[in-house]
Image (cartoon, rainbow, N blue to C red; front, side, top):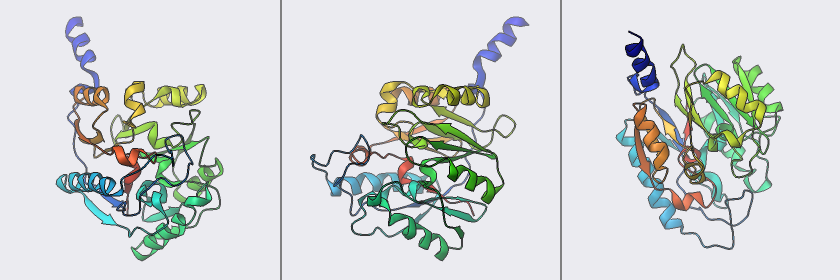
Length: 289
């Protein structure tokens, strides 16, 4: 009996049957994508970018989402805003309420009002931000809990705004590695509901300070940890419906870990958009009405 119990325990999360949850997302075509300034370690304006290639790669991500049955809504890209393709930074939506973004850098500042205008015109109650925050780049809904990043972009004050707006538990996590400047580059939400409603994640431990690492270990004992190689291609900047996980095609170790746990990883090449410091999740803002 002990051997049977040990074998079942060793199977762990892999024994769970994964169930896909329908998603509605907002995206923005990278028609104006380029790297003309540097606001993160990934960006090198002196190196050429290929806007047409960025569009083709983005279109493949769009087709994957359509193939998964997602509802994909679009916001019009605006000239002079090359990072507007990273829709996740445009705000955070939950319970029909959109908490707008207020960007750290002036270069991206006009994106905040543009996304808030879109939210208003599509039926969301919009709350304009007081504190600096970069939307779902730093706010991730996992089950009923919101994980909120700080350290490089979003102020901790925005976490208090989240608590007041949504009445949910908000857990502050501090990022310490400049290459992983948004929470969605260091954590991937794998399940919105599992383990008594807590959800589950994958993450890169070294992206966080020690106190935050302990919080993550306590909250998500079954979390997947990724290696440096997979993190370096923004493998964690992924999007999951609870069963299918769209990831960077070069994140091969992460892909293997997902398969072992019963997920279906779907690789996509967004290498051109990586030049701006973004990947799958950066291009994807979940709409929760």
